[in-house]
Length: 247
Image (cartoon, rainbow, N blue to C red; front, side, top):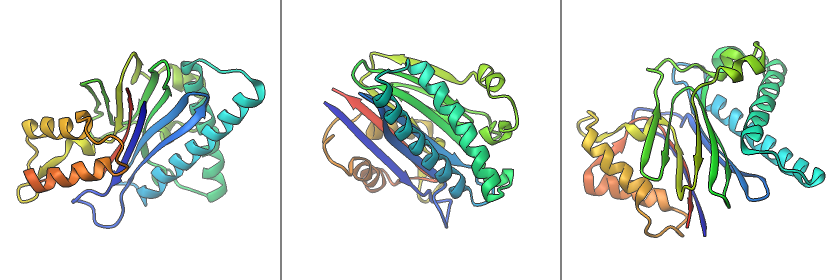
């Protein structure tokens, strides 16, 4: 059985908008496109950037699914990941020109995975910051608050950029995969905003490892409420998670 859960919620340090965005969209037969995006707080209307990227990825996923159906041909996961990013480059260039957007209006991190949910395999790339959880192993991509945003490279050759993109993972035989914005690592006491590592580990276990009540559509909301009520902890930065469990 397959369970998908998502959460996208504003952090306590933000007041107007949640700047994160998550997506889990079919991209082919037994395949999913998963993404978690985090708009730059120092950018202009960063909630717009992450939402725009997410909507474009949804559009691309639908087009890829249709193309697979018409051609009756499925690409490898790695090839499909590259195809999605190449199309995202092109779509962003069109949107930038059409809407006359400045670079500061398109600053968002991109944590993207193409997943085969039958073979339990995934190809993952992180552009900027992000956190990947896979069967108990947490991989943090941290660029020390200076993310190398995709938008910086829209005017460069895609093949050259892609060849130099090093923040990648190839995963196989997994049962629990989650893509998270770095808000996952910002849980702190509502009274004292210092983040304590031991508490973060307990939060991650509660949010990402607990396998009770997986059929509940409000899976993450219930756990966030429990974390706040029982431990007095809240996430100070915006939190975006998209999770896939295969039983």
